[in-house]
Length: 239
Image (cartoon, rainbow, N blue to C red; front, side):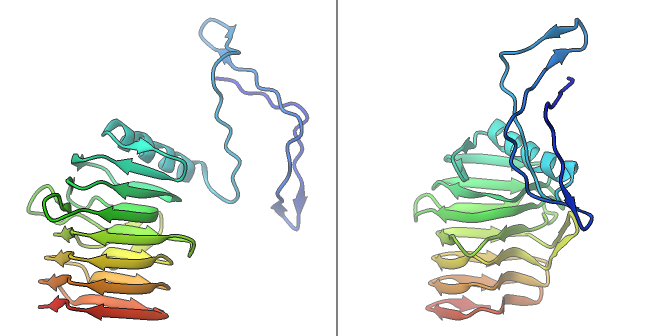
């Protein structure tokens, strides 16, 4: 495709492009094989600040991949209906979308595969229909990484995560199988176990409430809190 902007203006101050408002734009899309203009197709415009083309495509491709698996895209989150999801590639939402997981979901990740850049997570199962994160083989998957913005909270109920490890995605390292930052976390009736990472669960820059949950057979720290302003753990087991 060929895309042409009219009245394009770029403003640069101190070597950095500044935020601008596009007041007039025209798109001309042409099929380069038969030279026919395509004027009725939907065109997606992405205006970004300090993101590489690769990072943008990572997020778009991750959303597309999950939708092909059955996820439903909402305004600011992806909804995963009940079912089994086999993930064979690392997914990165770039901190733009949350994930809401319905009861009865099992997510199996391939060896060294991670799911990162999640804005927030709501994973509230029930006793009959728990929510499970695990590897699809005996080998460990990478990490589940939630990078919030202090505006949303994370909820886990009848949730389990096992056989994870660590991750390094787009230069961001996680030492925990489940890493949560800047997202107040409420966890009940849950289990974090059999993870080979430094931490089973690592929570940073958040408030934490954990109840009736179990942590065992994690390689080093069962739970690691950093800069947690308020924290309550009760009726839970650490082995």
